[in-house]
Length: 290
Image (cartoon, rainbow, N blue to C red):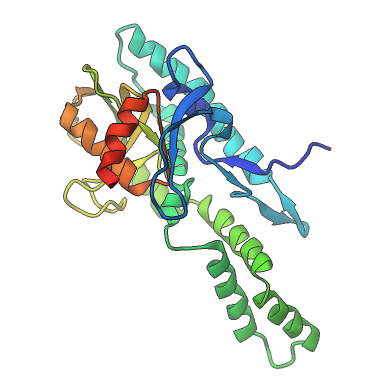
């Protein structure tokens, strides 16, 4: 039996590889927040050890810890990206523009949504311990009058055990995160793919958020008709999902240095970890958090 995977990638290696140091396909400049919520200085790291959170997607299955979500659910997404990203970058390298429609577009929309939800930055302020505590307190409150004393004592003991609360809360978080309601699926059906590219020395960074939800003056929720998903897939290319019922937005747009900077600053300000092919770029951006 294979060992259970415990180091879970928030940003998959196949995406990190697009942002690695030139000439080093598995090395990236990485900066991470410390306990004081400040970024440490950039350091050169292996993509295998970057954007990793221990047991982040572990659930309980048959009363035992399980990596099925990490290996099966996110593993399939990572396999998809492992095929998709090289195809897209090659199309751009050939001077063409990727066209995505039909079932391929449906799949891509769902992948982008899952990438947006995959990060701890998506649930800031909701710790696994607190989620577990709320669940146990709710179970105690809802116990029927004829409930066994042993069950009540079991729940009370769990309420006093932070480790058990974290395990329960994590299970609840992970299983809830991967669910997609019909309402969200229906809303996603309105989104089309557009591309933003950099034609200057300015580059996108990668971050633990991965997908930025931009409200364009309104809320960044999917109900906002002007909301967009932005996902940098290389230092020079960003994938965009946008509602464009009249098809007036160009399939490919050239991004401005100022806007690329804005996107990167947003990533720095809202992520727990960031990465780039360029140490100088990260150092420049990290100054915005000082």
